[in-house]
Length: 196
Image (cartoon, rainbow, N blue to C red; front, side, top):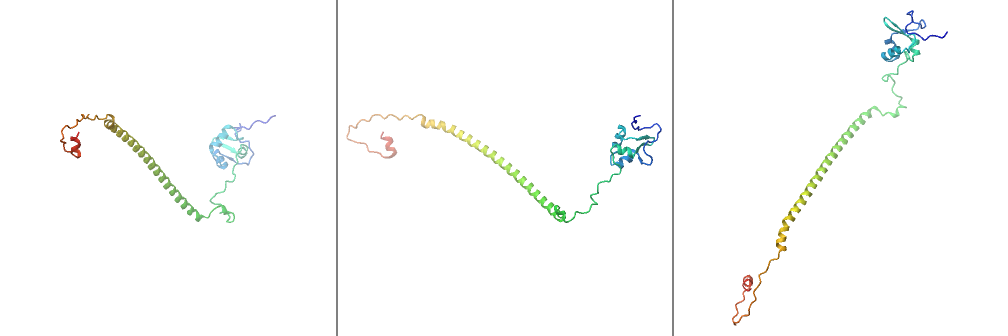
């Protein structure tokens, strides 16, 4: 006759595991296995822990059932790092002495501070460069406007001075003097104006 699957609730109410083996509650089993209580509860509900019995006080879980479900009760815990011995000095060449750690930390802080100063200086320099370029562009635009204005002012003056030539008065022909008397010659501006 084939063997029946293990039952979580046997009709007799007594566990079918071997006598003398420990049985724990769900909380105790979780603590001993190093897992959460909800992990044990999920395994119980899924039926993965054989011979587990639900009693009035809660679950009664046998050691054999935990082992069959893949849990490892009372396994040794990992070593406590605070209790481990210091590394062998001959093998500790990869670790710098502790007194240099403070020096390294101080040097790192100095370098980080210098880096921040350089970043701030670079940002300030960039802002100044952008402002100078903007000012130069505005000044170039102003110079172009002034040149255009000057050309507009000079154009009518050039037309007045060079565009329409002034008509010189036509001098009437001078008749030769009939008399022997000659008018005195005047020099300078007055002479030029009158000797026309």
